[in-house]
Length: 420
Image (cartoon, rainbow, N blue to C red):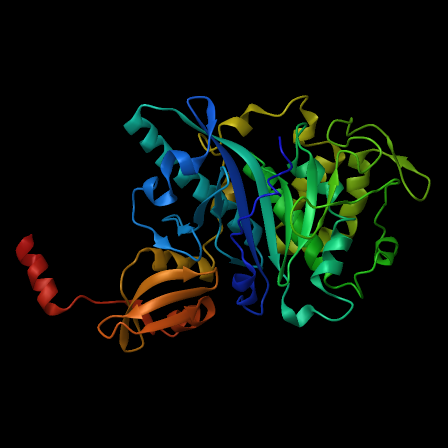
């Protein structure tokens, strides 16, 4: 398997989109898939042309070549892979459940459209999991000269790799990376075909990011102050595209993706020799409070169980599980994933993708396109004047009951009755 799709050029979360995000923190997930048709890997651009020729329902266009899926997220074909992404989700209690559920809802929708296309054309389509990207905004209010996205990403590149290895990678994986952006951070890992492990990965990263943002600075001395064990040797590699760092097969002296995760093979700077699981257990300690706050006790318990060996890591399997090669056929949601209600942003997005005219104040508008993840372009019905609203404005209008579906005119209503 290639290096987690990190050489890919497309971005579902472009800088303009995150520069326009709210002052509060938000998260979003992306996933990339290889497409196989009748057992042969194919470029989706060659098979379908663009996503609008695969998805039956008319989709709202987005910035660039992506489209808003009827399930709420986005789809894009990029240099040989199919990418889907979630809308941004407010970083608050339950956000990791919501973001993980949203990503799998996009995967389920994509799988259904592929099934329909396969039946129509007499072919078999498979989605092979390639990578998952965990995106976290870095609000401007938290920045300073000693606290910027680059320094934060470099510090996290010394914290996240071992826990993410155990939660999100398999024996064929090749890297875990952290990439800084002007307004966000992106953690790259292999695709995880198990929603519960993807949720655990998201929750650990979110808890770690929220904890580190509260540290005095982003220097490496904070690792010792907070009891983070450090493996020696530890050689970060440059990311394969753009800025950032990654831990690869040759970063730690031995290949962590093929080594026994239960064996004490890894020498630390303080002289101890521990297993990857024991190292991950120690790394977890300073982040437990924020992980529990953002997710819940059950997710924290699952993370701890993977680290102490009481729950399976995908690295416990001698080979990469077959679930990677045909993603979306069956999705094990779990009851906890279902119980979380939609966030305020999600509810607005679902109203937008319904494409119904909206009455905003005293005027009627139709959605024209998504401008990044935070802003939506509308056209006023009648005057055709352009206006852009962001999600927070639409949430406030909805709360004030100034945002409502447009009521059909009496003439249209009478015509509809006659048609019946």
